[in-house]
Length: 334
Image 1 (cartoon, rainbow, N blue to C red):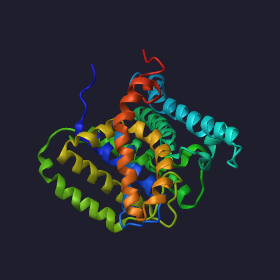
Image 2 (cartoon, rainbow, N blue to C red; image 1 turned 180 degrees about the vertical axis):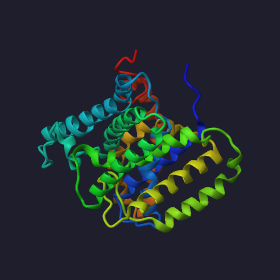
Image 3 (cartoon, rainbow, N blue to C red; image 1 turned 90 degrees about the vertical axis):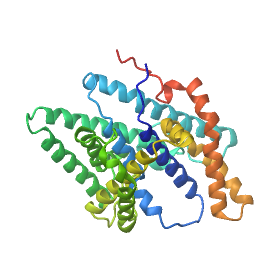
Image 4 (cartoon, helix red, strand yellow; image 1 turned 120 degrees about the vertical axis):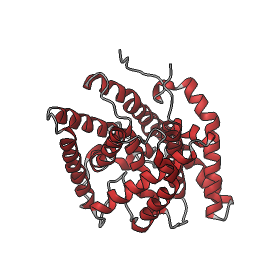
């Protein structure tokens, strides 16, 4: 039987994936807005936090690897091969265009990703492995597990931040996996030491708390980019303080609302949007720009059309592509 879902978590994921889609649509237009940096502070950290919130040891490292391979690595590999290697090379062959040849090992170089958003799946897979190793090391330090996990997660996070602060990049988004690890860890300890997933007496203050946290994020937001691990001229405390403020703001707002049917639906299947929306956006944006003079009108038309299409795309992918969209396992767990 399917486990009962936490509705407000699906809503939080829905808000987050809509912000991701909006961001990739917006990049195709010249339309600056005042909340751009604020959204960047918590948009991807929210996903990392939620992953840590639901971290489990499972059957041991082997079982954990199988599960994360099914849920993250196989979808990444499939959509990378299809949308960032096979299709671009077929188009290159048929059209004799001037596009660069897409090499099979181009995932080492993010600039070669035609379907760039799938970077997140590879990064999250690496982060899960790093945290599991920390979990195993901490487990050997009886009575000091949390202290050891805090220290190791903080050190690795700082190293990742240092690399981004000094424009030193590692292959395959490993630097981002390191710098964003503290968000994963905070998700883990939040689940362990709070009742955030259940109704509690603090819930009546969710909206006021969220407003204060969002104001903090807005006032101290700055330009960063997790996909390129870019933290130039940004302090460590600002990155993680604003990031966590924004993350908890979305969590508290979502918990207060509980459910918005279509947005929650998109959140539940957010991996499908993550892996495919960039293809739709890349087709829509140039065509909308050609006959809509207002950039903001074109942006919202593109966003509306893209999100509406998933009323059809999600059922199609559930029916015909369940193994490459984390709905069914490719590797048998038992």
